Length: 222
Image (cartoon, rainbow, N blue to C red; front, side, top):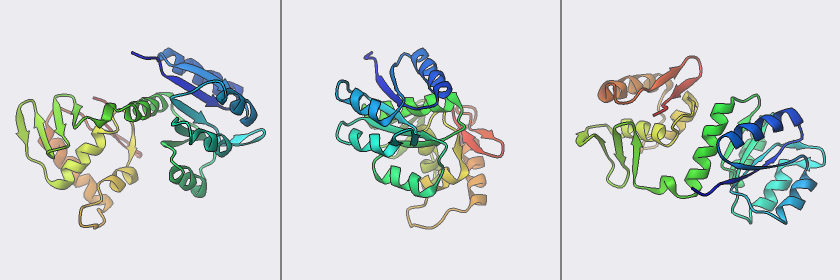
């Protein structure tokens, strides 16, 4: 498997060293820059599959590096203490793949890095997604447990698809609700989500564990 190259632009030495270590342990080749200027210089000499950008840097912001990366096809994850809605919206509208606020959990970050790299390398372009023994044929809109067809409502299907596309990532209730907005454009209420999670668990049995992260949301690790 080809080694993926990751650029980290982070001026906090402690955070950067932890990130470099964790990513290298996962088999990635990592380059660390401490400033916008250093990143600009590095990008004239090397190409990267993914960049993890801090927002607040000594000589500018993560957006300064982001603008350079837009023409390179490099995936971008912002990792920053800045949780201002305006910056988050600007990042996603500009084409960022993810936006993570500090403090963060390393395992979750690694999952998001893996998901982003795989998605942009085409791994998730397959019409069939797998969750344990469950197969989701996205082209046909059908779900199978082994060889047996599983009957799901449209909303249950979208809920399962959301988990399949975010394996190993804790999703807040708000994030899930955004993804399962029904086809008629009607808002799915928070209380309704609890009901559909329960129904989906009952239909899936023990094939998939939809874990409740108390007070935060849900996660599926398979």
